[in-house]
Image 1: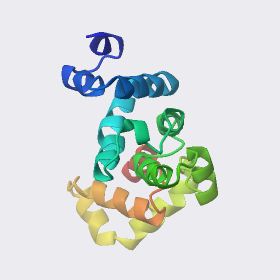
Image 2: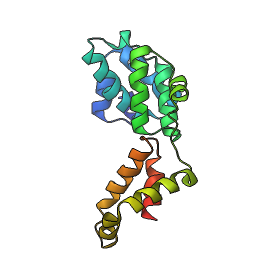
Image 3: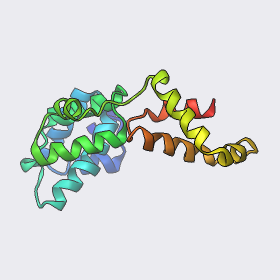
Image 4: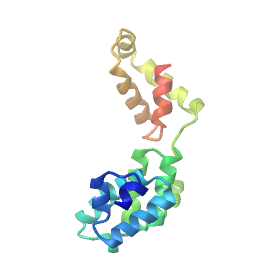
Length: 170
């Protein structure tokens, strides 16, 4: 009941996260440090527990410390990385127990949010697909996703999806 009220979680999420004292404690630590309870719950329930279950481990034997997961989520919330990058970083954190900041820095995984860095890529993609541009201008708005996808491919997944969407629309 306290998790539902204090962290504004659904009954299901709260029930899952209070399944053991250790899991509840882990969640509370991540939620407080990241300051985003819902995101913390989702990552713990889906990414972390999915990985733990797949490897036959439980929360007591997780290679990802609560402080590290909270740090990763803070990078995500602050738009320094996007969801795709976060999952890549999480994979390495789980395998090696490495700090997310060190992984991001070592692998150059910082999200590109600067419009001036993304505009040339958007322009290149638009120029490379004149038929799709014509179709988009005729009202085929589903092609927005195509263009965003092409830009994300060109930036190796490091483009900020919100910024890329805005630039493609322009």
